[in-house]
Length: 145
Image (cartoon, rainbow, N blue to C red; front, side, top):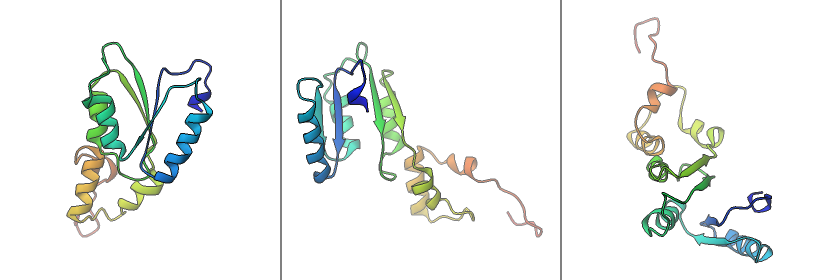
């Protein structure tokens, strides 16, 4: 959809890990050749986005602006990556948060977690405060929490 807007972006950066999907993106780039400036990065979006947008330093975020659409399949995009993009004060982030598919499966009604599960969720949400937001602590009839 973004490739067909009336007033296009200066550059489109598409990041994909799957080699099969990379071929589809290359075909899309050919289809829009001469009309859209499309860069395709193959690999993990965390690494590739950070390297291309932040580490290489070829964007002056005092003058450039960007919109990053993040559509991770699961919990591959840690909050630290989102924070790093946001620290530019020039990148707007739109995140497809897959609540039903991924997060709810990892948030049992019981509120009981292994340390590994808690660690994954802390990385994903950026802190351990998610637990207080998601779970309400109450006492049962016998006084247990």
